[in-house]
Image: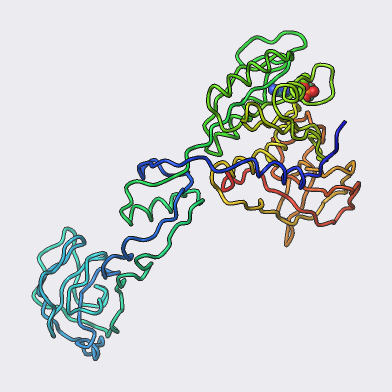
Length: 417
Ligand code: AMP
Ligand code: MG
């Protein structure tokens, strides 16, 4: 039957097959969620010039050193400085400029006095400035201003290659004037299900048939991960039909072919046999539950992963094997998925395979408490719909008592996509 690989060994064989895809340049407004293909350095400091951080008056701090509410200091207002405008002159001793948050601090000024600390008001809409302002407090040089470079320095590395661009990253790139962004191309994956029993949603059911859940579930998983998906028609349990789907995938120029079902030892499980005969079979048995049969190989040099057919097995094997493979294709750094220590609220059993148990984890007092989310049969998709975590029971372990701390993956963690 071939060797049963540990999950870790299977990943060690699987992941090196995948290299980052090529890169392309996209406009910044299309870069959110894409993976940076080059490290970005700041082209200028941020903020790029010293600005007021409060609405108030630009002053020389030395002028108002003695100011207090009992002994206000009177300064001459020489102008008005809204954000976006630059004062052409130099502020001299005894002078103040009305300044708004974000306006460039004028030459000669070294601090801002907030309007609240003066006798002035900024009515809406702004009226002409009075000629003078009384300042009720002292400020130090540097108060209420954002010095040039306070946030980051020019040339500083701001985003690393392999970073999936989050909204805040897009904002930063905009501040740096980066109109176009080098990103990795979206990985392109073809998917198809196999099975004589499958009917597509929208078609009428007939006795013995079931709706094809895996194709749509896998497409949704892939799309959430930013993958370009080519969905092929599901194939009957027939070697020629399966090979035809593989050929279609190759013709589409995909980076990975993902199938579901037909990988076990049933009489009609042809996927592995087709890969073995027409492609290259790397391994197909992994010590994992759910999902022992998992075919990894290639077809015409395109990497192939044949997921098991039971929907929960397909889901779990996607999470365990396909997701990190896709991360490599996408150009993301190899990073183990975060694991959380959770405490069993009930005893659990396993069969000695490395097991991924569906669980509902809730925060109770100081602990994350885990209860199983219904039956663990690999066909019970509803239990993974209810679960919010997968408990990872190591291989060789067959039972764990209540109260045991186990590692868990949280599902629904969209930061992982
Ligand atoms: P197999 O891997 O072909 O032995 O299938 C294992 C189980 O998963 C069987 O009960 C199949 O009917 C079911 N199954 C296979 N493919 C799908 C699919 N695409 N959607 C839902 N269930 C499936
Ligand atoms: Mg089948």
